[in-house]
Amino acid sequence: MAASAVASVDRPFDPGWWTGRSDQDGAGDTTRYHERVSPWTGDSRAGIGLIGFACDEGVRRNGGRTGAADGPAAFRRALANLAVHHGAPVYDCGDVACAGGALEAAQLRLAAAVCGIAGRTALPIVLGGGHEVAYGTWLGIADARPGAHLLIVNFDAHFDLRAGREATSGTPFRQIAEECGRRRIPFSYVCLGISRPSNTAALFSRAAALNVEFWRDEELHRQALSSVDDRLQQRIAACDGVYLTIDLDVLPGEKAPGVSAPAARGVSLDIVEHLAATVAKSGKLLGADIAELNPAFDRDTLTARVAARLVDGIVMAAHPPI
Ligand SMILES: [Mn+2]
Image (cartoon, rainbow, N blue to C red):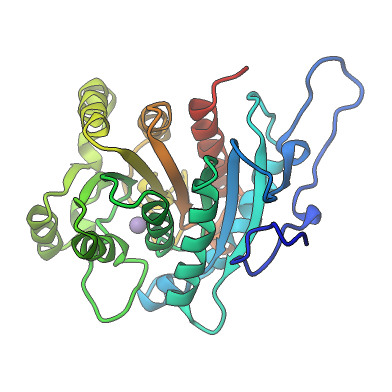
């Protein structure tokens, strides 16, 4: 690997990750992602920088169903064959992995990788991994933009504001709130898709104490979409940059079965796509991740396909077709 690649990854780019069908019989643009993706180098500038976070130690510590460490590989397989309808370069920076349960160290390596990409004006998109990915992604963005007022937009059935001695997949936004305090920057957290029965009253109280703005899953229906969209745009206008994170367990369990905690209700994919695009096309998106893809519990690679479609939609909104 070239010395200019991202130093903090544990598995460098492997061309074997990006294989798929190639259409050589027709005229016109037949590009698919596996033909667009190239390794990140020190010369890479604008574009999309994919990083895998092959880790489910946070899920294990949280008592969930492990398997999300294999999420990045499943995600790449699903994205590889999707047709490309934008002109943005797409780079693969490799994987950060979590060996021997050393989650905190893996989060710091992820942060270094994200910071390196965001600092080159590229858009880092991290492929989880459990939702413990969020602390690493946010840290990398915050390090790339010292002092900036960052808005967190999280699509999730859970607040992930749990207290506790150690980091898990249920603690990242509480950890971020504490780090914002240490850095003397605002903690601005919007959460879309909260399932009331899946979060204790204590967690709702913590969310209120931290001024978290949230919509419950049952509030995110089509009739409410334009007012939620307006409010989201107001929040985006009031910050310097946005970190977008999507926990796939925000979707209905039948749409995203390959997660640690499938949702009994969930928010429909069209609502999530619409609001995620609002964030991506704002011009303020600094980084994103997609969490909890667990191929061990997936059906017909459906969850991986949904994850790939969501990321393609974010890329399309951030980089309109040229
Ligand atoms: Mn989550």
